[in-house]
Amino acid sequence: MKVTCNIIKDILPLYVENMLSDDSRSMVIEHIEECQACKNDLNEMCTFNQMPVDSDATPLIKIKSTLRKKKIQIAIFSMMFSIMLIVITIAFLTAPEYIPYSERSVTINQIGNGLITAQFEDIVSGYDIDKYPTEDKTGYVYHITTWNSIWNRNISTKKMIANNTVLNAKGENVISVYYYQTDGSEDVLMFGKDMNPGGGIVTLPRLFLTYYAFIAIVFAATCGLIMLILYHNKKILNFTLKVFFLPVSYLLGHLIIKGFTTASYTATRDFYAILLVMIPLYTAFLIVVNFIRQYKNKNVRAIK
Image 1 (tube, rainbow, N blue to C red):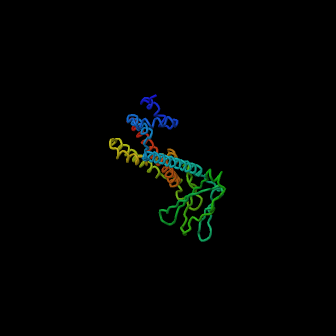
Image 2 (image 1 turned 90 degrees about the vertical axis):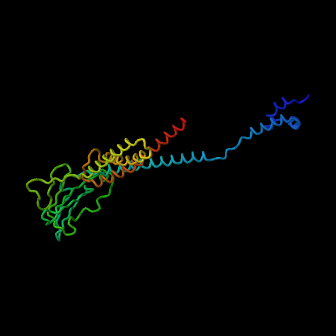
Image 3 (image 1 turned 180 degrees about the vertical axis):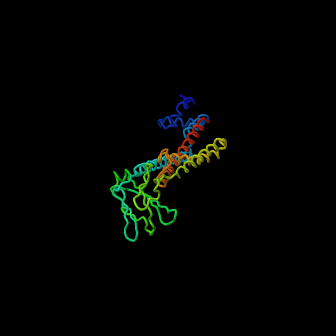
């Protein structure tokens, strides 16, 4: 029987896969040595089976880099969120609970050399002392308040380091010492001369947090107006958006720490607490915006 090209073509795939017997392989070899057409068919099959290997690892490197960036962003977001929760929790637990005046909270004593001391009881976990000179510059008027907190009352077992404080350590002349309330009632004279015999003295809370909140509102409104006018300029829009989140983060931090109240008897403490909440909030805003941009760019590429 004569071996035709059709027979060889039928068994060439088996030959390429090395699945023929020795006799069949010899038959194919003998035929392709004499038949150029079948030899060309064999070469095509061998070329098709040997798929070129793509040695360009750039796409894989880009994917790996993108995944690494996302992991870093998620880690930073989680860390900042945790910091914010910790700060809020600490601010809540250590928030001053002002103690109304009573002889159990603080006692004023006069010792030798004209020194005046304030003795605080164990129920006091913190205090504030303000002083200012009298109009005739003959001495100073002191205002004291005390507070406790959830932390000191229920969690911490550590008492105040110093239960006694010297008011006039530099030898100042103490004219009056008042205990100021935080409920709007009159200050209580504890020592010395009443500076306002005809009417009571009331210590008001500090208001500088109000100014900072107002500045943040104006700043945020200005940035919003710039973005509204120049929304077509992507560079200016992106930069202004980052700046816009600064006052917004401050206002949210103020809302978390102080609520809708801007007056505070411990304004400095509250201001630092607001800043500590503001920083992770601002970082979180930037990360979220970056995620949104990546998602939009991915959808645009998918549509194209």
